[in-house]
Length: 100
Image (cartoon, rainbow, N blue to C red; front, side, top):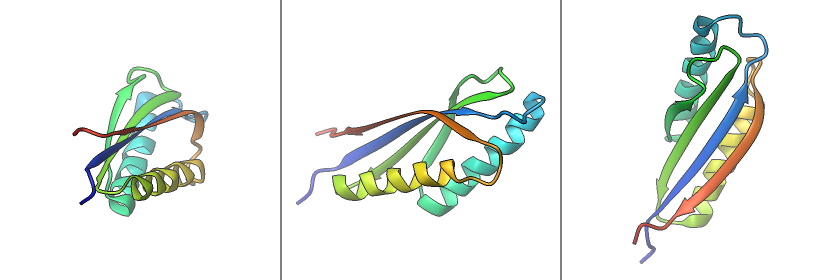
């Protein structure tokens, strides 16, 4: 039996074409929705909430296999990098948490 694992990914983003918080929210809502739908992950905006051109998203994925969890996070990062809106990845931090 595999032990459960929680995979997390913190994405620091730059939104160079955002001119207001409204612009930023529109891009982030779209990105968050697509990540949830495509990868079945949990997404939360966790930092830089009052800055127009930067954002921080925390992504979490629960799995029973570490390799699968890492693959999902890798796909999430690739998707965010190739996102059609002007979003630049500034920093990516991943972690695997074994709760038991």
